Structures are given as structure tokens and as C-alpha cells.
Image (cartoon, rainbow, N blue to C red):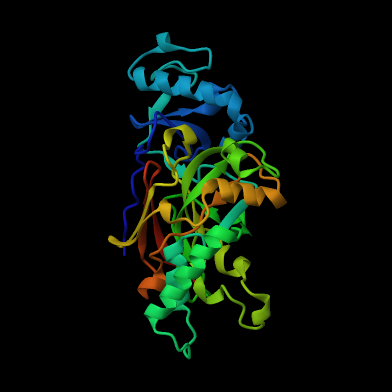
Length: 355
């Protein structure tokens, strides 16, 4: 099955977003993307050849106003010459130091390389109910309706009384938003989990819920693939979940395309998360269904760990996964994922070659 990769699109909320891009046979660069479909290489604009998006987040409060100014210049200077130069190093569309270039033709990579990935489990009410019903024991005496009602009551009590469930993912599982995803030969039930990802903007350690959002720089899209067959250890059930095995194969976390600053997302607690499999809608849910909101998740993770600039906090998967539909990922499947205001990604599944 031959599938044409999606062309990069600057469809996001606000005046600009950040990404990591590359021209053919060139090294990736941190890019400032504007809705007009143009990109500025920030290494040149900031006169720093070693600049990355993660390093931008390490200076986020300092660089954010400058990024806004550059984006405003880029939105108005299309077609200008060197006369449009600014002290940040841009010279308009045809200048020699920091020229804007078309997004079309560039490769889009994962927008940031985090040092840490914090993943949230069982954080969408309907998703947890669906999974619990799907995983009922064969001898469970309850009807599906009775089981659903009982689990719904537990979820409501959990949201009111309990703590978020957060575990660690591996940065090596991250891949670009348009890259192929290799399905390992051992993965018997590979599943999709499109979700909102939070990008940390400044270190957070033991911050309160009230303070937590001050440490968030922006948002992006993550598809947290999971092999359902290896979530639970079969050899020793008391061990519980095995997130290393089930979630961290290379490429199991397509990320991006863009990081949109917090100021451009009016309410991250009310975004539409949509995933289509081969054109058919599977996930279509609002982030309103989260049991624990972004501030609760960031604060909770920070009570144990020091969150660092560029780190990711994945907020959990809404309902509509493959286990719910009885249809898991196969060779040649194409996933199209989007979240309101954050753009869209397209990834194709490729069966891992066996020797």
C-alpha cells in the first residue's frame, strides 16, 4: 500500500509555532513557523549555530517576546529585501542572514528532544470505562451495562479523591509527525492513543496546582502507541504493568508537528482530539473528559521529579482506541491525528522486517 506523506501545514492557533525542520541533506534546525506557511531558521536569527528548540525553552521567558516580534515581522515582510533587517538577524524574505523560507519542501521532525517524558495513564473517564469493560474476565458475572455503571462510579470517585497516575516514557521512542512507525514483530496488539502533550518551559519541582501552569511553555500532539498484549506481565501478575515493553519501542511516540505557545490556546481543557484510521474516525473526544487537568498532572509529577525545560507531560488518551473497536494496528495502516489549534500529523504503520 503506497501512501503519500501529508504535506507540512501551518494550521495552528496563534501568530506562530515552533518546530524542528530540515532541508534535504541538511541538518535539522529550530524553526519559527507562521500561519502564512513560512519558516525562519532561528539559529541564524539568534546568531547561535548550536540552537535547538529545547535550548529555547531553557530561556523561555527571555526569548518569547523576541519570537513574537520575529513572527510579526515574518507575517508582514513577505517579499521584502534586506531593507527589512532587524537586530535579531532577520533580513526579510530574500536577505542573507535569517531569511524566511517556504514550509513546503522541508522535512518536519519531532519538534523537541526532551530529556524526560512523563506519561499519564487512566486519565480520560470514558477511555478507562471502555478499557475496563473490554478487559473483563471471561467469568465476570456482570453484564456490560452493569460493569460500565460500576466503573463510571469508581472514575467519578477517583477524580474527586485520588491522585493522577503518572509513569515514565523514553525519549528514544519519539519520532516525527510524518514518519513511518515500525510495528515490532513481537507486538501482538499494537494500539493508538492520540493525546495532548504539555511542553515544560521552566524547571518545576514541588510546585502547587496554582503555580503549575506558569511552568508550561506550550502544547503539541503525541500518539502514545501501546502494545496491549504486553501491558500486563503474564509471568508474574503481582508485578503489574510493564510500560517499558508495551510503550517504548522505537517510533512508538510520533510527536508534533508544532509546539504552540500557551498564550495561543485559550482553553487546553476544551480541545478536540481526533484520530482517523485509514480515513475512518476512531477517536473524537474533548479534553474536557480528563479526570485530572493539566495543572494537576504537572504539579503531581513535580512532587517527585524535577521537570526540566523541553520535557513532555502526556495527558492521557481519550476514548476510541483499538481495543474499544476490536481493531488493532496492522501493516499499511495510516493514522491521521489532530488536536484543535495544534495542527495534524500523519503516520503510516510498517511491519518490522523479520530475519
